[in-house]
Amino acid sequence: MKKLAKRITGKEWGMIILTILFTCFSVYLELEVPTYISQITELLGTSGTQLGELWSPAAKMIGLSLLAFFSSVMVGFFAARVAASYTTHLRRDVFHQVLDFSQTEIKRFSIPSLLTRTTNDITQVQMLFTMGLQVVTRGPIMAIWAIGKILGKSEYWLWAVVVAVIVNVLMTTVLMTLAFPKQSVIQKLTDKLNSITRESLTGIRVVRAYNAEDYQDEKFEAANDEVTRLNLFVNRLMAIMNPIMMAISSGLSLAIYWIGAYIINDASLAERLPLFSDMVVFMSYAMQVVMGFLLMGALFIVLPRTLVSAGRINQVLDLHSSIENPSQAQAADPSVQGQVEFRDATFRYSKNSEAVVEHVTFKAEAGQTVAFIGSTGSGKST
Ligand SMILES: Nc1ncnc2c1ncn2[C@@H]1O[C@H](COP(=O)(O)OP(=O)(O)OP(=O)(O)O)[C@@H](O)[C@H]1O
Ligand SMILES: [Mg+2]
Image (cartoon, rainbow, N blue to C red):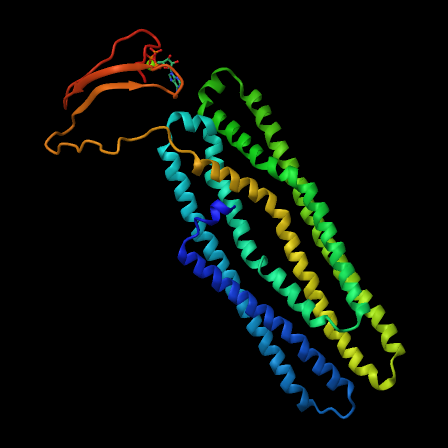
């Protein structure tokens, strides 16, 4: 991840900072809204309140919500932009790197794997990037800010929030530990699927000649089923997240109202209204705390797969081609056209193998036909 982060350009950092600023701004606005809710509740609870008095807090509240909405849109916009721009040049770098590879390096990764790495793996990184930018900053800021706002209110309510957060963290950890091992295998299986598809398509004539369609079909089916099974597993885990999220936040609302009912019941008549409005405000903040943690949880579920993808991309970027061009290549003579010359060329397929051709020297003039003669395996095609 760190290595990939180094590839973020200055312009992208600028956009990332903009995203974070807009996130802070929208969180700030969202956290201000409950203040007006409390004002309105208190006004509504006081007898003799005129409709006109409600206008000012209501208008401010609507204004804040609209601004918050606008900031969230900007956050989404910048996050998507940065992620797309980043992955565009990451993909370009990987592609350039692969073009420089010799047969040996390509064999080491295998062509299907290189295909997956330049497409699917990079898409994973892009997804995490977009999501992360919106969530990584928003979650903690929202949680911490909202906690700050509710500290010092009733400690019973606070306990309800603490319990909700703990349950939430526990659930996320369980889901993550369940998903992690599977997530890392998915990319490998995608390679396998690509490899079988490629093998069947490039070798389609052989497959038909040997009437091996069923055999290839079965092979494909097995790989396809495996990927589907794992994806289903992971996605089901993600799907469980949603109801759990709902259950936690509904449970928390229930707990707050329950505790509130007792607190208000015990209070004197004059204290009841401020306590009630406190409760409404507390509720909004508590929901925001829980939301903050849930957002972070969602990120942690996607994280493992992306870490695997990031590692796979780095492997490609870190591997240097075994072909080294001499630093002082002889400049081509512009007067010579269409002439090919080999001077004492030697070739081996990998560093440790024997040279397939050695000391080859010949010249092919434009328009000339040059032929190699030799026994099988002597190195003509090479
Ligand atoms: N991609 C490769 N990786 C490693 N070794 C290779 C590769 N391709 C060929 N070789 C080896 O290089 C040697 C020369 O092979 P090459 O295919 O060039 O011979 P050839 O003269 O074209 O043979 P034929 O007449 O059968 O076409 C052989 O020993 C072969 O095993
Ligand atoms: Mg040959």
